[in-house]
Image (cartoon, rainbow, N blue to C red; front, side, top):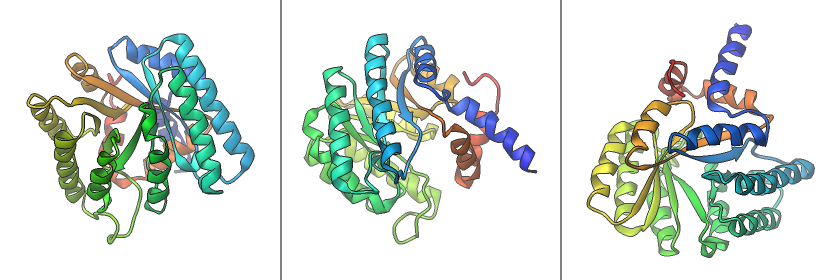
Length: 283
């Protein structure tokens, strides 16, 4: 059984993950660009507690920023707060985040802040708001968290750019919606708020009904709406969507790609997406 899991793990990781190095991420990004699709590149790793690993992650992003610029690729980057040292201390994460945002701003590259477990939400939002005036930053909001509608409303008052996702971390029911349908309903509510209050945001989901609703709403709004998905899940659909809309695929890379694939395999709520990722003609 372990062998079968290992094979399935590598099959999924091979479709979802660009590879181990920056050159792999750039190569896949260029292929996406040829299909009129942008990339949101993330260097794998989270909950880092070793200063050397944190420095390595930050240096990797600095190199990535430089290489994206040199190659002229349509790509943004996505960082995780615990990758930048948040687990060790807020000041460490703030300094590293500021360094990355400043370097990206000089190269005219957008920086997304990913959202992690709910215990990091308040500090992640605080980190983001420190740099929200840089204008090249955005933050992820997860609709499965009960607090997210209020968070989105407060962030919008500060001019935040939001990437709306459903979320996949396991949380207690008093913090997160236990039923997927409730997270979907909350996603729809927050999306409506974004159309009313935001000038620019991303609808990041594989839910075609939500995408169709967003497309319909965008026809009656001046907001700049983009659509985000995970690379390797519904690429063919993303390519068709990109014929008329701004589409960006989330593209991880790094040495932790095998364990990342394994974690995805174990997420029950992603079982349908896993099945889709194994189907042919996804790239």
